[in-house]
Picture (cartoon, rainbow over the protein chains, first blue to last red):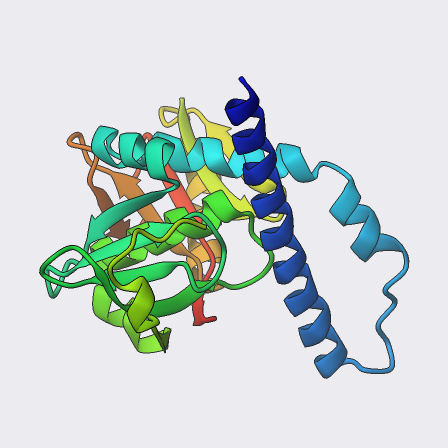
Length: 163
Length: 73
């Protein structure tokens, strides 16, 4: 029971930190675009407080409706699911998150390179992951053309990545 | 009842419409054109559960999902 509680707390903390990171990027981009007009007081922070978990839950529900039974089982068990790119046939692991959460897998099923792309605007994690899945499965080249590539640390290639 | 699901900051917004109603169908087609024109990608699921991107409005689609343009993160 204690382990379950710990797991739930860890999951909530991960979601919260992921959201904080995304909010920070949104704020940073806003400041870059309109440095004199940003008002960080009301709407931005109110929006963060109000309905955060509801929005996250809606996004995850939509994601789960669109995952195959195998993908859903994998996601429920490991917080990631794997999809096949429509052009190359390569496998990609999409971990729970909104950025830097896609890893291309090598022949042995280990992460070998990371890809970062996401829909524009503020979307919850479930929506982002679903967009990434559909993009890789229907327009892999187009998705990777806009994506930023990042390397996976050598030490982590032989371990399962959990976010 | 058919549904158009648009991803947004609330999670998603769902537009239900009767595909047998000509007016509702017209509005749905207009929404499809507006969203795809704004850069959204429209996708539907096949009977086997596979996602397929739609470039034109499909009046027979029971559920169409729209997500915004992708950018590098």
